Length: 246
Image 1 (cartoon, helix red, strand yellow):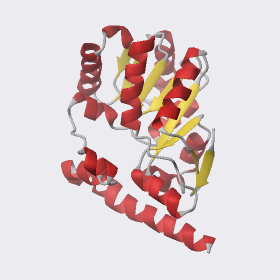
Image 2 (cartoon, one colour):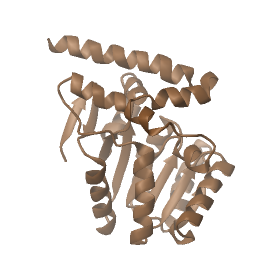
Image 3 (cartoon, one colour):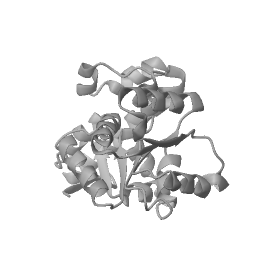
Image 4 (cartoon, one colour):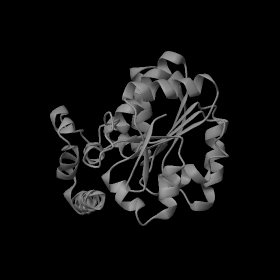
């Protein structure tokens, strides 16, 4: 897989279609694929959080989730083909699971949210795609037991909806325990959208790179630091890197 490196971050240069083909191939062959997405905020955090950087960069498949990352890749002379949004990839993989009879374990978010996700997908497709589910509240010492619960469910696919860097570190630290789960993916706040708790931005805002602003407008008190401060830092990093290239 073609890979670029920007701001201490590895990113695979793939379209959505190419990514789905790689995922399907890994599951059908019984291999394991550890997936992660990166956006502006995560790349900023990776500059100082070396554990997060290692967890991300050692993943098997890394997509650019944010449009800002795609723009940055072009500014820095390493253009990515397109954005592969985590929630869009998750939705496509759920459909793939239904077609190919794969089973999914949903892990993360509040109990009522993850239960709503399972109910929605069971109704839209079939309960047969559900291997199991669990909320995202746990103690550090429970991690391996949770990982074993996921493996014992017979899941081919694991979606983890926990905030960074906890999500990336959980997947990295328990990779060996989860070795029988073919596709493992962190999905951030995607469960909130699928459950109906949070509305997703209109398509024109997604395409214009303004999805973050739509999300911020729904929960300004909780999201202002992540988006306003984080995005400003990301722009600074890109401009600094561009200046070094001259």
